[in-house]
Image (tube, rainbow, N blue to C red; front, side):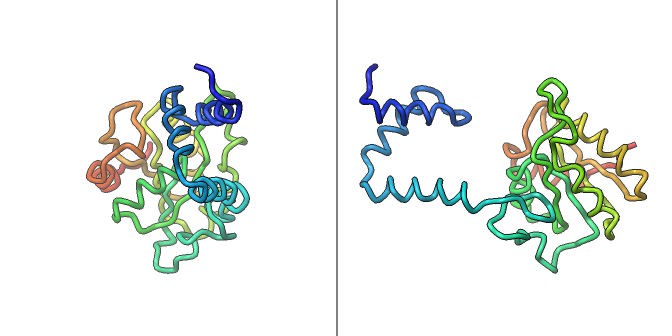
Amino acid sequence: MHYAKPLARLVNELERLPGVGPKSAQRIAFHILRQPQEQSRLLAEAITAVKENIRFCKECSNFTDQEICDICSDSRRNHTLLCVVAETRDLIAMEKTNEYRGLYHVLQGLISPVDNVTPDLLKIRELFPRVVNGVEEVILALNPTAEGQTTALYLASKLRPLGVRVTQIAHGLPAGGDLDYADQATLISALQWRREIT
């Protein structure tokens, strides 16, 4: 199908989004086209604002629009408990359980030799100073994939010498599953039945 050039450009850009194929991109593009001009402007401004204002939290590497995110600056949270997750969406999934009240550390990915993702490309270096600053337990809440397990074993080997308890959430998830797709009951159970990594 031949689109006008601006519409073709929009469809092409939408196709670059994860999980958006050609038909979905076309559907979204036509939806945007049918919206009032003001709606399109608001969408464009929201995208621009995210790119310009969102950065990593100085403490946990979560996405935030402040220097320190709301979770790290909350004095009511348990600062002796640190949950390590791969992505911000995993942090959000854990928060939705209303079960975990400690702090987080977001790696912004997982170790993956196949994809040339080494530990130095992740937010791992920033984790260790936090651990020696009063943390008693580090919970590894990583996806039950080869990359998740590789990362968990690597982190456990580096954390144990620091004298901190290292646990891993129990996985009531299928192998290869993602935390952000898990229901709250599964995540609560996984958190409650976490185990120490040996």
